[in-house]
Amino acid sequence: MTSPRVALVQMNATGDADGNRARVRDLIRQAVDGGAGFIATPEVTNLIAPNRDALFSTIVSEAEDPCLAAIRELASEQDVTILIGSLALKAEGERERAINRSFLIGPDGKIQARYDKIHMFEADLGEQGKFREAASYKPGSKAVLADMSWAKLGMTVCYDLRFPSLYRVLAQAGADILTVPSAFTAPTGRAHWHTLLKARAIENGCFVLAPAQWGRHHGMDETSLRESYGHSLIIDPWGTVLADAGEGEGVVFADLDMDLIGKARQRVPSLSNDREWSL
Image (cartoon, rainbow, N blue to C red; front, side, top):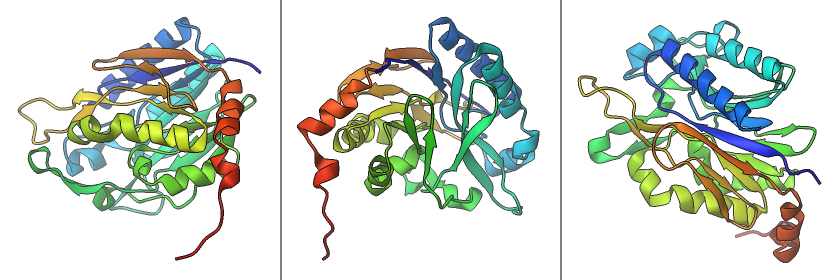
């Protein structure tokens, strides 16, 4: 079986949509130069706005979004597959809420799959502030398994990570790779990021690709203190971390030995050992 080279982009998106687009294009080109045929970017690649008003005054529909158009063009130009971790977009038929949508872009530049983030982060982190995603974002309702030529991809986003049943369904449906593009908060990232991602890989016998946002997203004069953890991770089906981006912007790479999926599932056949039960 092939051992494709994959790359994860780690970036620090802000409220400057034009600047974000230019930066992610540069990072994707670095990934291409490093030999990656599959490249993934973090959650909300196009925009992390300092507040709700800034979000809704900036976002546009999927058809109008310049970041989506630019990355589609780049995928076609470089003949690579790109997972746009997600984009903040206007929701169809809604005025009060946006959508957080992940895209799989083929090497022809066409959209192969879309996934709308299902689970909304609703938490109070003290000094880091209160997070009420459902107030601004419309949740999705469908799991998505995308069929690439060399692997099946289970698409998720950030807070989905805390709901293992979603990953189980994707793995049982045939997922080889689980993607978890994120803007994980710094406090919860330090406590849980590595542990949860390794668990999703181990319990499902899948590769996990988790490109992440990093750092403070707004200046000290902004009302938002939002800070993301970074540490984009590539994890194999046995739970071994193949790449960790640590802190800062950049790109990390790994060559995926796809044979490891079958080996891990043979050694611990939890997917086939699963049973129906009741309480």
